[in-house]
Length: 298
Image (cartoon, rainbow, N blue to C red):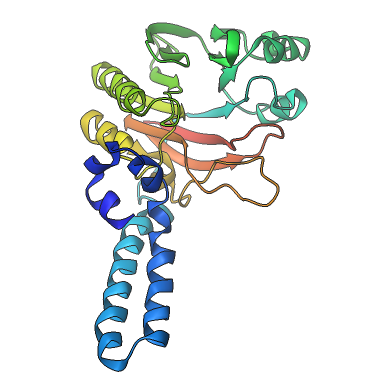
């Protein structure tokens, strides 16, 4: 895990992406190794192995620490709230989803199918959110963006699950770009995982507006090579990091005995848009926790 975090390019090798998903837990692993070395080794080996394991634990702690310290930036200007939820092809409770979206300005729904579309129409989403881009698709590969503010579609990316580049409030002072989507995960296609992340990176780099939000089920943790390349190439910041909201954990969310372990759902920012808060939202039925970000438009 430490090697894959330090040398992310290795994550494209077979099986390495899965191991890299758990890189954040290297902190716990090295603390356990340090304890076992202290207990189980002779004094000479202990003096070498235990400090080395503690040093590696400290390295992981240094990688994680910024997520627990909010950026010291005065936040002014209007705010916008964005909710993103993977609805798992109709498995998500539509009443709970409607409650979760009550205070959102923009809602991104992924793995969107016809049953969810019908359920939300029956709950008056057309009036609550008069603007939308996208819709349901067979095999739950659809995505949709609902909004209380006008939307302009800029591009549709060629990803397996629908991904859209939009502009919110086009032509107005508070306009911002929104890249909302769902690149394929490594178990479906390891090469597709890298390729589709590159498509999102290219779209993010190419958006010329002063503000950009990339949000959705990105099928990568912040440690993954896909996200790290995207952030570097498109000059993106992590909303959870910026808000000091802690290491994001959103998947799996529908296991009885296993808590969410991996931060696959993310919000990334560029330009004059800043994270006021970033939280996870449980919507029963989904295998992901949703994410809600409150952003200040500077």
